[in-house]
Length: 211
Length: 211
DNA sequence: TGTGATCATGACGGGGCGTCACGATCGTCC
DNA sequence: GGACGATCGTGACGCCCCGTCATGATCACA
Image 1 (cartoon, protein in one colour):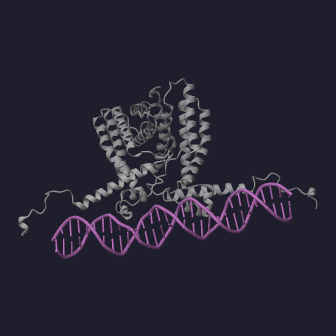
Image 2 (cartoon, protein in one colour; image 1 turned 120 degrees about the vertical axis):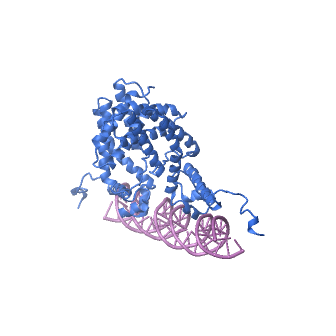
Image 3 (cartoon, helix red, strand yellow; image 1 turned 90 degrees about the vertical axis):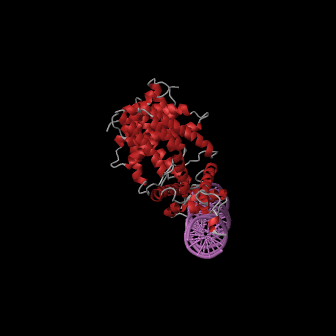
């Protein structure tokens, strides 16, 4: 039969090819397995072998995608930051003043981590520490985005210039640590935690909510 | 010769005996070596072998004193907290109100870490992360001491009750992160950083120092 | 001086690490 | 459709670090 009579393939525009697909699938499988293993064994106790074993892939395959356990962890942090960034951007776009941005951003963050924790901080042994997120591209981008949002909204309201680096650092620090403490309490109260953090940042001690 | 004619030993009241002395010496040697190794290689890259090699002791000796690299790190953090605690207590005793305590404590902390960094964060490779201090006894004691000082001074000034756990967490978070950022700037300005942190905690954004 | 306890020592088995040569599979071109 | 080259999964391998343990040296004490 001639070639003309046949369509070359049943599907016209298939996805990027099998090679590319298994590549992203493997990468994702390793990431998912790492999330589980870190959640179950803790970061320190986890090994590359633990992660790769759970995927069914060979040990050598791991190193085709990541150089080390540290790099996988960074990739997870990067992934989290990438998923959080649109939520942050949404808040910075709809915000009219400093308070509305800070409140929206912190509440979004607290809800985000509360959801995440159910997903992968399942049952870590007590005292186990998750290392600080290294400044990966996406993590840095979140920091920069907060900083730029601060700059924009502060200039827009003709606020006096302050040390933006310190301010951003301090706000993120408060959000992160209050967020951690919030997760330890039952029930998890994102609104209460948000209220505390926002009022501390906006008005300091005198403005804090009273018990 | 009879035993009566002799004093039992040339020195009457010597230090706790040689056994005890070499024990504390070894413990200290391992701690010092660990400080150096963590400072030079970073925490992740450092191995128990690196640490013990620098002391000249045998590898097995390490395990007579510490169970793991993590435990040595905790001991270092514990040591730092133990040395900082009297400085903190001094501030909490001389403080008359909330502001004077917060200012004194944060300035003391910033000067402390600035001194410490010269001692052991010598030339760590960039991007290298030191893990968060685990809640060792002394570290926990510092947290509790801040918390109790807050409680005391706030009650003394008849301030309305607030969430002390959140407040302590947030203040320590601000101090730690602003402290880190401060150390990255040249020259290191402990007074400027203190001013920023204190004003943020006491009055929030509107009270921040202007550039 | 003798005796028991303590502790430094380093060799050892176990296992995780990162690599690499091989082979299978896929994309591509004729 | 067939053949070639590139890509990548595979798992065995050597290396080194881990934590342990039997041994012997040293110290406290009688």
